[in-house]
Image (cartoon, rainbow, N blue to C red):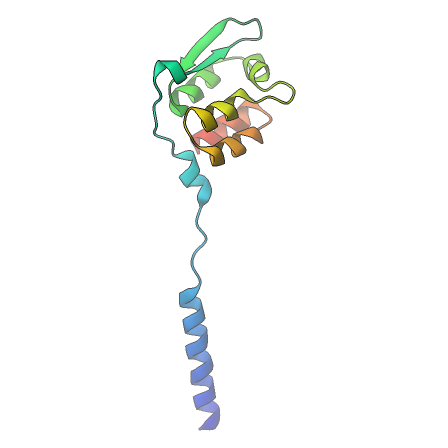
Length: 118
């Protein structure tokens, strides 16, 4: 009988601790949802390495479409040495610093598109 009551106490403790443990929050999905659309004055001007304007993005959806349609050199132009225009735009114009930090870590056009679409 003593062992049974001890088992019940242990079971109750385990049940309490499992109830208290929260499921991990998927922060990435929260970050990627940026429904904000900016005015023309804060839009992202996607340019080629020759300075030619490829397109203008007012939100991340438009940016992804422009990236898909553009060459890899366009991505390289905006992510040169110690510079990442995409991250700066997301932080400044869209006001999402956490997403900007994630974008800054992307080294390829494909990685950036994957991050923004998933």
